[in-house]
Image (cartoon, rainbow, N blue to C red; front, side, top):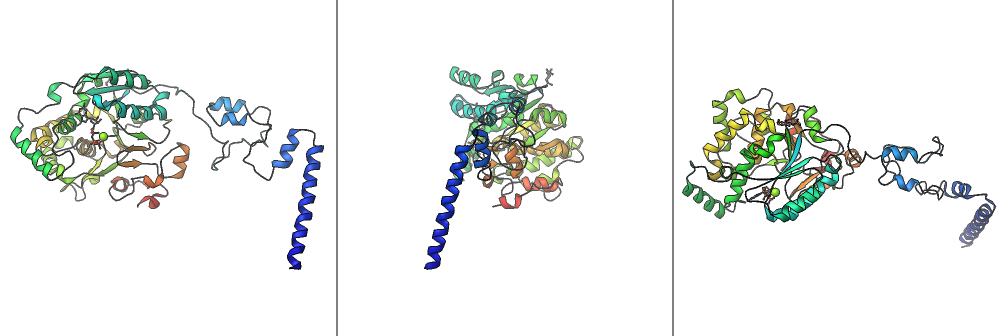
Length: 427
Ligand SMILES: Nc1nc2c(ncn2[C@@H]2O[C@H](COP(=O)(O)OP(=O)(O)OP(=O)(O)O)[C@@H](O)[C@H]2O)c(=O)[nH]1
Ligand SMILES: *[C@@H]1O[C@H](CO)[C@@H](O)[C@H](O)[C@H]1NC(C)=O
Ligand SMILES: [Mg+2]
């Protein structure tokens, strides 16, 4: 007990002495600057001294050049706002210019939608504009099998920073070709309905998949462009896109870019691979050396493993889709009838073409584009990237390294090193 009392007394004496010392310092100091340096130094380096309220401004939307100007008057050797890369403090951010300078690519956004999609596509556009296009102002093409109504056009034009264009799909691109047996197609839909295959009983979904496989790039509005970026209703972007992905495609000779890859439901494509193999036999000239066959087949081409790029996000070359190889491939598939006798999706069709008709290096995984379409997320794996691009996604949600994703395989067959920390995102 006496020992504890002594400690208490000592503590009181020290506290009293310290308080008197502080009060003395405050009352005898000559100005706010010395107040700041004496009292705050060593306590909290993060709190801005009261004399420097201007540093608040650089935290927000002042471009880099202007931010440098606000440093005038401070000694660079002691300034607390000296960039300190690698640590996460409020004042070491630099900002890209508000408007991108330099030449743009010959490119457009492309959306297939119904009038009932107005408010869901509005959300998607907002994401794309906020994270990317407000600085680049690329055009946006909307296609529909029905005429767009005034509300759709008004809302989308309001939100897109580039030009908007609205097109109607020609009848022959959204209907049963004459070689399709309608009764057989109806029996397939009924069978798939009973087996509860998703969209298995839908006619419009099949027209959609066939259109996205073989016709969107044939629309006259697309003729003016070289690259496209497909955007669906209700998607989200999680990271800033400061570098132009279209320009990246052009400058690096990329033809097809993706964010998410996964396995297809085998029930929807029972004969897609056999049909593709027939095509390869008949048109061997289209199969490119150094292709990505290993991404789609585990046994040298005997069977399809189901791996495909998720086509609700795509940044691609229209010239690739308009090439003889791709056009012949689609024609061959269309004649075989699998869009109606099965339920072939445009994602495996695009992916098989990209894997067989393009060189490995012409494909690109857009790791820095954080993306969501129900129910999967692509979130950049490494902390460095998520900090650099100001991503808002939870890394735990990243689908890349989970069992149902094919992105791991994509890295392996391309001899790419997986990003730091991927092991922690596998489950
Ligand atoms: N004009 C038009 N567009 C359609 C039709 N069906 C689908 N789409 C569009 O085609 C794209 C793909 O359709 P979704 O219904 O999103 O298909 P999905 O992505 O496989 O499935 P979800 O999980 O429902 O998103 C979207 O951009 C739709 O807006 C249709 O009948 N008419
Ligand atoms: C863009 O590409 C299309 C298709 O290749 C071409 O017809 C058009 O002239 C190009 N436009 C510009 C401005 O280069
Ligand atoms: Mg969708």
